[in-house]
Length: 243
Image (cartoon, rainbow, N blue to C red; front, side):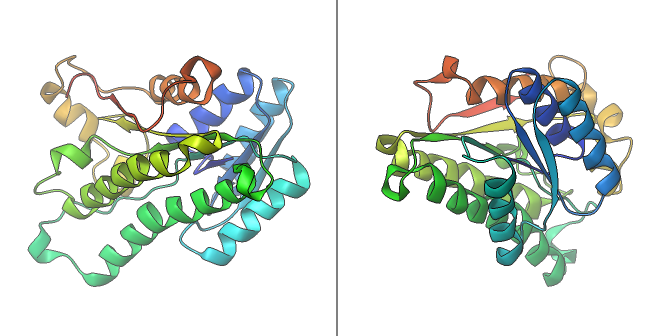
């Protein structure tokens, strides 16, 4: 299950996981066409794939999302919490409550609700046989994003804490939980935050001198989902070009 799988990093993750042998459920909120295109790419690789519309900030939607995975693909072995939002750059003293609530609902409550549903399927306490969860955090969680979106950075700091705590909570149940923290990656999220030129404008802050690409993040996620990372849990893996 890849939430936010219809665009950007989530789409790259879903496609690469299919290439590496996974059947994939692509969660999306609005763009059915983009999610459908990802599903077709996954199917062209010989895997089963479905797209499912859901707002991860809605508990009812999340419950329905995972029930649909049960019905269409069967046993859940992996969850990638990729769905996330950002808002236009703003100082904290200019923030409105509605914006903060929405960012926290999608970026914090969403991954927690999805992790809950995954654990209810993966844990031996519920008849499961283990699995893996990878959360998409952000380098913003340690940089803070001053003058841009401290609220977004704070939401990703919560994802980091959730990752560490949950990893310890379910480690002896055969469930590994890790996070990938992308840096400046060339995706549409910057345009949705009102700064389509952000990668080019800030690339000189990156020691490697460039922004990253979605497939470079996807490779880290796919590794954490694989047996090659069998002794890795509670890790926060930076994919940020050294920033």
